[in-house]
Image 1 (cartoon, rainbow over the protein chains, first blue to last red):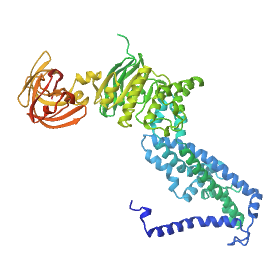
Image 2: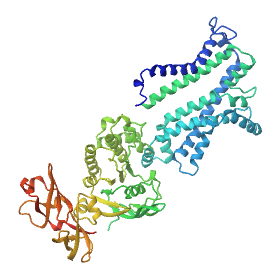
Image 3: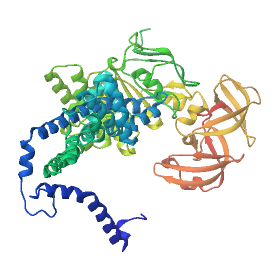
Image 4: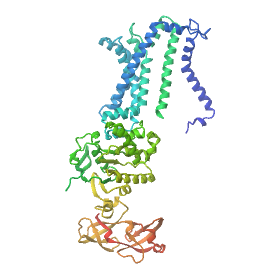
Length: 266
Length: 358
């Protein structure tokens, strides 16, 4: 191959350095936040003069942080369930359907991924205000589901495309009704895609902040909204602690996904 | 006459302007192994899929023991099917794959267990029961698919080119298995293939499809020794077609003049010919005799090439009219000096030669 790593020669060094820089650029801020959350300085000074867990104590002692985290988890879970359910049905239509306008529908379902989030947020805010859904859990879940849908459809549709429909036909000839065949054969066969869809939709809602800021009310805040709000009112290392937990949970989910994928694929 | 077991009545399937199957009518007795043979796009698979219920025919009917199957959805037809592609359920073990049709029929556990054991024994894969399909070779997967298709004792087993993804040696091995299983179970089998050798090896009867119609139906011998059309003669086995001019036909025995001017009489005439009509004379490569003292019709040729193929020799010869023909005498009946003369006659039985319209 033209760009074979082993044959790059001195360019290898350049490539490695560049890659390291990109990785550092992406990861360093996160590493800083995590370090600061354990630092004893009230003013987020770096390097920290000493190490402490008191910001975490403060975080867990404040019911509003706990509540924000629980709200986030609740909304993200509901979003994941809804996005997977709709994504599954949509994927069958997009992959197996032969109707007119299928490609347009596919584009439409994937637009939330390319549309500027602020534009979407303002539009849905105005709409939900009129519908009386502003500041409600339902409103949150609907808005996040729309945003999460592309992340659900892409892995499920990909898995379904890779699944030979003859296998489903074989189940039907064996005596399974078309619905039974889908539930007992097709869904288990594309479970990796469904599982990825669930994780990605959960994360799409879990760390979403723009739409959440518009949807939030003083009584209903997700964790990212609470972090953003606190950042503006008082800059405290508790925010760093909360952010670290957010990152930790996200990382944990990604690791679990990777491990499960490996297990399911063998 | 007793009612046929499976009956296909004037089955027609059109896709828009294209008609894939033209009014196919066919009766299949119980326990028969019938093969649909034909080139791709000849309508053989479409016919099979209409019987399975995956294609709704445009018109016509499919009757099983006198009852129409068309209003019965696929999953209630109780038909077994083995597909061209590997269709084992990837997340279920071999045993669970075979058990699946019994489980959806809610058969008791003890029966399922017994039947799965029987079926795996039938296809000789008992020791693979707990494996996942991914850990099996292609041939093993198709044998499990066969076990799964037979687990619920279906009256008919449909097989859609089940061996086409396998290599030649494995294919022959599984053909032998399929013959044995057909013998042991007595199930009625409809088998689709484009491979004439496979069809000849397996079938009681062969229906040769061409452009959505059945060109000829009969035993392998019928099709090989008594082809109804030049298409059948060309599709089954190897054939030489010589340009000829029809002179006269008396009691089905035709006399023709070949391109080099020689006359040959006593040929099987398919259809009626006018005097002077252009025709094609079909002679199988193995019907030619080269040994001294051979009788029958004579054809003067020039030997172009001789190759040794073990049990047979393969000779390329040129007729007086300049047409190349293929001759395959058995090696045992041919001495080397027989082919040393470049210009010589070859002989054939005109009763084993056929005349078709050009």
